[in-house]
Structures are given as structure tokens and as C-alpha cells.
Length: 371
Image (cartoon, rainbow, N blue to C red; front, top):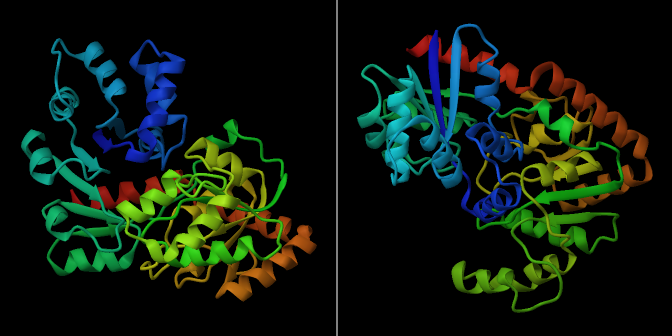
């Protein structure tokens, strides 16, 4: 039996929500705290370790390196040591579990740090999904997993083994949401410096007259010209050229959420939009699978490689430019039965080919090939 330890993290923008949730819910054990966190379904939750633990020849453990409360629960129940920092607690966990394989899903720890605490002979992998991968930081891992073949090729070019592992859908989330369709079309997500195209598309959609609801988790709402959103763009991002568009998006924003709150939006949408980052050249992001899992019609930018996952315009709907997008959304708005048909076809494809249980089978093959 192989023992795998996955090291994940909480994105900084989620930390205040998680801290508030722990204060409100008051878990008393590590087990309670663990499920409280992962049942938020942030990012991919614990889908990989959950699916691995269904297999007879794997034992999988998940730790969240920067989840202070969860890590302190673990330390209290499994060690006599106290007052340890995040890296020291992780060292305790590695010593406790003695994994054969470590999968690093965070940039908060360096390869040299994890290598120093890992058992001798431990196979150490990392995930790198950046368009401009951290080649120097990650090149010494035994293997890099990624969702983009361009990143795979860059690592292989410098002598680092790499393998593709696309994202997938976690059907456990269906137990936490209502999939009754109550909104015609939505976008739920965020806008950052790598989303100029997304910003332009959404700005034009808010002026199109379509039945469209916007949920931006990192934007404020309303007409305040001195909101945190506006000040961040001026001071932190130095993005004054987009201020009018940003203000108009803020005025139309319904305030999105993360994790489970985002899934609730996707689940109740007849159709929802997907835009990749500006420099992402192929279809690969997680939204390709999050929305379709609910039978929601995914309307996505027409990136190369999409045909590897879906039949275009049968299982998902594609667009090439803003006028094309507006025309297709108008068509779906007037023909909701078509959106329903595409959504159900997309859901069928997800459940036959794009669940995390499918990806974990691929991961197991990758591990056995390289260790």
C-alpha cells in the first residue's frame, strides 16, 4: 500500500471567511474542523485524497499548511509539542504519517524545505498551473503535474518530469446545493490583472440589456467611487485606465462568493459564462467542469483543446468574440429549452468522463509509472 500526503493551502482572499466560520461554528475536534473546512468546496476541496482512499492500495492524507485552526487541532490530538509554526507542524505531520508520495499544491513551501523533512526515498510531486510556471522554484521536484501541455513541455525541456492532469467535477457538492434553475445567465468569479479580456467582455455584457447577473467575489457592490475595489485598482494595481469599466462592473455586481457559495450560483443558473486568463492558450480551467456538473449550460471562450473534453455546441456552447457571445446569449434567453438540452448533455459527459474519480485513476497510473 502506498501512502500519499497532499499539502494544500487556503488562498489568502478566503482566509477571513474561514476564520469567521470557525469562530461561528466552534468545532471541537480535528475531524469536525476538517469537514467544516473541506465541505466549503474551495478549489478542488479534498477530492483527490477522498477518491484515493476508495482504492485498496492507497492511503491518502490531506493537510492545509496555512489553516491555523485546523493545524492546531491536528497538533493537539497527535503530538505533545506546542507553540509550533506552520512549517514545524508540517514537519511533525510528515514524521507522523511517513508518506511514500507527497503532492505539493501550494507555493507556500519550497522544494528544499519539503525534501529536508520527507522520508528517504519519498517521491515528491508538485502542481503548477501557472501560465508562466515557476521553473526555477519547481524544477527539482521529482514530477510536476499541470493542466496545460505548454507548461508540461517547459518543464520537460529543462529536464523535469511532468504529466498532464486536467481538472474535474466533484459530485459530492450536489448534496449541498439546490440545482433548480432560477437565473437565466450568470458569471461568478473574479477579475485580476490577468483578466483584461474578461473585464472587457463583462463590461459590455452589463450594457447589453440581456438578463444577466454578475457575481464578482473580489469586487464591492454599489456606486461608491472610493470603495476598496476602486482604491485597490488605483493604489495596488495602478490600473487607472480601466477605472470607468471597473466602476460600472461594481455598480452591477451582486457580490459573489467562493467555494460552496459560488457553486450555488452555478447550480441555479440556466447558463453561465467561462473566460480563461489572457495568456492561457488552451482550454484547461476548472470552470469547464464545475458548471456542467449541475446541468448548467456552459458558454465558454472557444479555446483550442476544448474538443478534448466536450463536443462543441452540443455539450457546451462556444463564442469567439463579444458580438458572437451576445448573439448566442440572446438565442439562449429566447430558447431556454436549448440551454437545458446543452446543459444536460454536458452533465452526461462530465459524469461519464470528467469526475475526480476518473482523474485519480490517471494520477495513480502516473505515480506507478514514475516511482
